[in-house]
Amino acid sequence: MSIDTTDLSLLERPEWTALAARFEETGTATLRDLFASDPDRGSELSAEGAGLFLDYSKNRLDRKTIGMLIALAEACGLKERTERMFTGEKINITEDRAVLHVALRAPRDAVIEVDGVNVVPAVHEVLDRMADFSEKIRSGAWTGHTGKRIRNVVNIGIGGSDLGPVMAYEALKPFSDRSMTFRFVSNVDGNDFAEKTRDLCPEETLFIISSKTFTTLETMTNAHTARDWSLAGLGGDDAAVAKHFVAVSTNAKGVGDFGIDTDNMFGFWDWVGGRYSMDSAIGLSTMLAIGPDHFRDLLAGFHEMDVHFRTAPLEENLPALLGLVGIWNRNFLGCDTVAVLPYDNELCRFSAYLQQLEMESNGKHATLGGDRVGWDTCPVIWGEPGTNGQHAFYQMIHQGTKPVPCDFICFCEPANPIGDHQDKLVSNVFAQAEALAFGKTEAEVKAEGVPDALLPHKEFDGNRPTNVIMAQKLDPRTLGRLVALYEHKVFTQGTIWGINSFDQWGVELGKVLAKRIIPQLSQSDPVTDHDSSTNQLINRYRTHRLG
Ligand code: G6Q
Image (cartoon, rainbow, N blue to C red; front, side):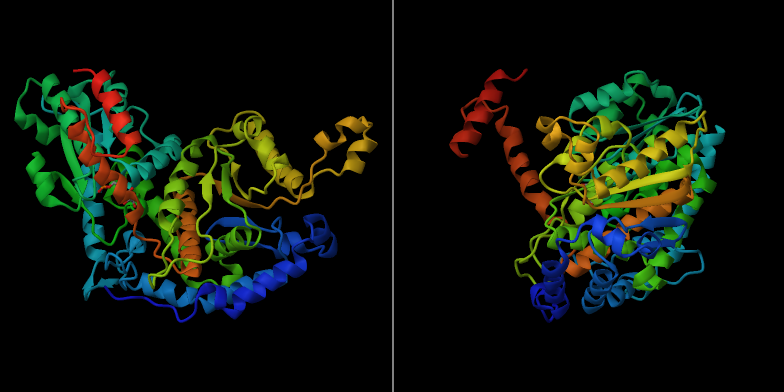
């Protein structure tokens, strides 16, 4: 393993200490002050690129601070590291892998080499096979074992092999084939499989087993259950598997051993991280839902943002700016969480998707050089679509004791233009961002005739940081741009924090312990080899379980 050491700890960098001093000097300036002293602030602290507009002016910083954050990014080698990613260098040093999700959406004639081999032709070969397969399913040319057309597609996968496909399916439903049903089974909880398949006919159901490794406990358990369910409904003939199961994986042997013909396997590569894989063959369910042309639009949107991130100066670079503002809020303002609040119901799973993208990538405590970080890394990412959240948790965002930076996402054109819904929806984005920035002083509340006793309850401090991201409409291309925006934001922050955004060792320990506990749950003798709490829990379950 080669060690990617940085010569200085982040805290020793002069750009970092300058930012700390800047915070001491300007940290008490309010958004009211900042807007009053800089009338062009709204347009000055905004940027546009790859079809997205970002207004970051309602953050507690000014143009000078942005310049200093950019200087920090330069000192941390953001541009150089971006090139290293885009050119296939093995920057995932703990797994000795390249990080090339950008190759998944590179044009056919691009050349991106890993170990001297151009990976782009293989990417397009898989995309073409996916397109061919999708056309066959969508047209009805591919039939099930009994000759019936496939009407239901069930993706079985978890984590990176589930969250992207679910999010994209929900986001792009208006572009999907409405004569087909799409379901996503992820949890090893049997309820998930049972509920998602209870009304489906096995003769018309195709399962996509999506697993990079083809060893994941949840996915393999669900895959075997699906095979039993399918065969039970198809007369028990093993030959049926070939018509009702396809796989998306890097593990051809595992796929073959499961009984899926590797002709019906769509591959990807070790340089695609799970949480960066929705635009690889892991997106097969997305392609089946929206069709190959829309899927190519999705990839084109990703690619547009890749080009923007790679080439735009940092002052105008949306992912870099989003990342840098996030660093300011996290490391200088001390914000522990970030809310992502899409004002589009179709983005109902977007925050959950970003939760994995950001927290699994940057929730790390070790630097690339193997030291313990001396600064905070990823905040908690959470959120729900607006306006629903406004009637639930926004109370805390407005009047809680710590600021919660928010990303509001909205669109000018709705997928379903009905009456004045869209104006009412989007007006709430602008109103929330305005209210959070400027609040309402006690004097203003008092002037409305509010009794003194209620003043503390009805005043709003304001001064709460927000970003607004706007696009024309939520279509496949825009979704690609939006996801790539956040992927590169994560990269920007990971680079500054000096951590490896592309491994996930923190998920291993629990998995290993669960494997040890599984057989203990059905043993007849009491379990005694854990701590007293774990022994008690296991034994209580053991004596009360079914069977
Ligand atoms: C993502 C993670 C993780 C992974 C799942 C599923 O970056 O690695 O969420 O995607 O554990 O793994 P498989 O695709 O190998 O089943």
